[in-house]
Image 1 (cartoon, rainbow, N blue to C red):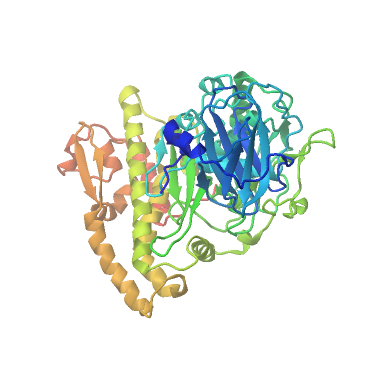
Image 2 (image 1 turned 30 degrees about the vertical axis):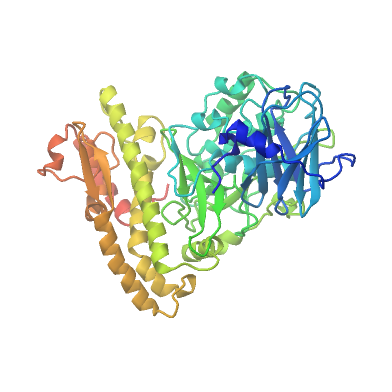
Length: 593
């Protein structure tokens, strides 16, 4: 398996790959054109001789097989490249030390050139005028997102914020794209709701695209959020903008958007995101997932199912503490429900289209999003699905061959362990804050504990704990799912009831074997087995308050050796309200607003 980025390969190895002469390659005398559904992109915008030139070829329609480079002397060679998933499909490589003169870069499929670009290092005449959110730019956005968060699927991927991701030139194809050290001047700390907007705005800044966003309400228990007219910013489209301009716009956007912006009704035209069909070809990296309670995730990669490995759909989310973590699709991470207060599900960005010269730049209504441009079409399919149908449909997409029951259990167990490890970090962040700040963190009233601002939003964990309790239930209930939906599993003649019983026995063994470790109030470590965590569910239903010691936040009981190091607890008034709110967590149902 290739490493997560060709940019990690030693330059000598890359140059060795470039030395392969290709006498049968396409003639350099033919006209060099970009394809209709494929395009070669290079970075930085204005390369210099001797400066490494990044190359990414992206195709929306079907796979591209290799990159061919013709140097200024007319010599052709194959550029070593790392392949991205699809759709869209991508190849990315690097020219380590281009000289002066024109390079031709061709992407081929079946021996035929499907797209071609020419680059002349040192000639600063590259024009990006008239750029718009067309198929080529959307495909690059998807490939860029996949590359940003790429890593072996079994690797746990987490960052304290988005900043180290964007400032990593091996991850970020657009790092230093404007050649101004611009990325060192950009803070990148979006939270959950800000993340999709921030990434879109960053991409628009680098590529010279317009950006659209709306101010929205938060909705009510009877109706989803409603939004105002779009605010369209064209400041990046005129010429490369300084980092200051991006900082100002991103700050303005993050001050306006919130979790309600993704939860608009599925049929609503006045929205920044629109619902799409649940099909493999529509769910590109960069697609938004809006759950009915306000959390959002961004798809980053499909890992295909093989004969010996389950498929995966990976996403990232940001937390109130600004941490960014990659997660796999499953019921514990992707909450789905049909509710009058939200339009939940997978959604694509309603990009502003047009260049200004051919009419106003504006987002298209749902009726115009028919897929004719090659992009995912508008669809209300998800409105008609029960949660059971939704998860069954997604399991069919991720694992079209069906799942072995034991493999399904193992994948679900790993997802639960990922959530527990993420919670360890969140609780530790809260503990560090409480040690350095005197006083009590105010606790909001009622449903506002899930949606607020300030230290409570940053360091409490009610939403995360709700998802964790759901995840524990999903793992525990997997044997029953096998009995109810045997068609989703590869049983090889085994009776569904017997298969369910076998997984129940496996569950009892595994929860004794798996554990997490957290740091107690005195700095010592404490191990908790998954079986102990299951037994502590009543304690975890009221464990989200940062005013409580870390031992309480992991469900430790008064009078036990584990609890002996506890040094503080939430005020009695707050604990009384937590008891009042306990049914929400016991029944794993978010309250209406």
